[in-house]
Length: 287
Image (cartoon, rainbow, N blue to C red; front, top):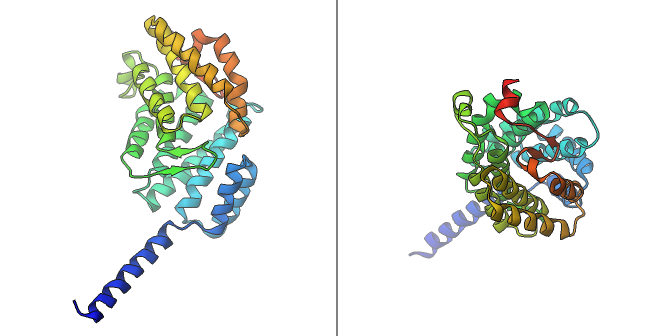
């Protein structure tokens, strides 16, 4: 090959690498929001992203992080305010996630965080009042898993696909599993699927307290649903392991506080949610 052709090929390759770098590089303000998120400063993270997206409203990297931060803010407020006060937060998080899908359809984050927002709208409103949205939520998370997205927050509190495993695990535990659910929504709960996804989450990050806690909850639920003593025993082991982990992140503090309460109410594990306990029985629905 002639030197001129080699030089031209190198120039093109450099240009492509530069463009790729431009696509994936984070703006300094988004980098700062990530630093604040790692430090557990949820409100500071939101302020940084709100300021940046006011000027740059079409940056998907900023938008999905803002959607996530709003969700986390809702988790913290769940301990302080009535459920209905959090609904506008989740509604906005959903809109932001939908915009991410439009801007970057190959990214899994838009589908993940829209589903999370819809899921929290359901738990804050009462799951039995939102059963018609269950299949839409499930489809969003399953679609997220088809995307070649990878991410891990430095603190380990958030990751992809770990967050999707978490979401699906909670979905299949909390979604009612009675046969009529398929008539109502086209899907239903499945505690064995729940345990499977939480095992995948723990394998993805064995030091993440939420994953160990949720695997323990799912196994307790399985144990009581299926009269499986081994599942109950293993569930308690995972909850104790989660409780022994160090914690500093705000949602970890909530989980650490709640683990002893979960063990006290282990028969109700199927209805556990960080923002409250749900009765998802068919009898409650008929009432």
